[in-house]
Amino acid sequence: MSLNIAIDGPVGAGKSSIASLVAQELHILHLDTGAMYRAVGLYMLRRGVDPQNEAAVSAALPGCHVDVRYVDGSQRTLLCGEDVSGLIRTPEVSQAASAISQWPAVRGEMAGMQRRIAAGCDLIMDGRDIGTNVLPDAALKVFLTADPRERARRRYEELRQKGLPDTLEEVLAALVARDEQDMRREANPLRQAEDAVLLDTTHMTIREAVDAIVRLAREV
Ligand code: DC
Image (tube, rainbow, N blue to C red; front, top):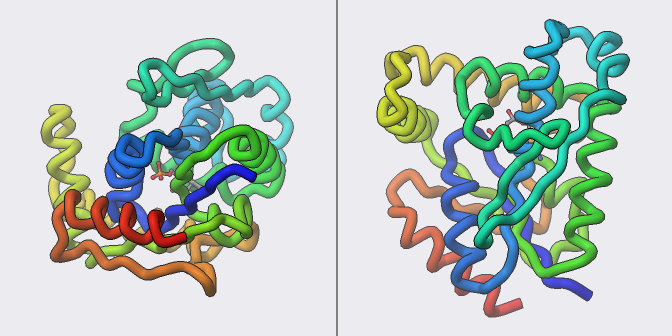
């Protein structure tokens, strides 16, 4: 039986950065499931498919091949064989990813692939429905959150460093809209699993959050 750790939470709670450092410390794999939904979102945008149109997204899905590879321990996300890891972090792709992730056809495919990856190794997986749907038997579940303004500030800094022009207010509005869409959808919405540990990182450094999760993981 492999060791699985599930990390869920809203936009900008630090899931991915924190999970990646926990993975390094515990010598396990990190699967960022958001990157997979982002690759599907990018595919739909490139094909001119409206991400909010369930029928159109489902019809285009058979041509959309998402895969994950590890290079020196870090995840690369492939779309139809192309490494799109650097192309999926824009605000447009974030919105498209959130929109296409509403649709059960997309979710079924992504969750199936995520479970197959988890069955073969020890890993920490981050997303929105990992503890509630993908890995309901995970040894440790953590729900990571932080105050929306603080999450927006972190996301704003990330985008600014990449030279993207969005203002803090725009980042906050997009974040709130995406959280609402992710929490209100019918299929596997974002919510805290009953047996998840709640970790509010508003006043924590990344290092403190990593240490807290590593400690919890060593106790299971
Ligand atoms: O974690 P992220 O911001 O990269 O995720 C992008 C979008 O993908 C997010 O707004 C909702 C969707 N997502 C999901 O529905 N389920 C997951 N397990 C991961 C992401």
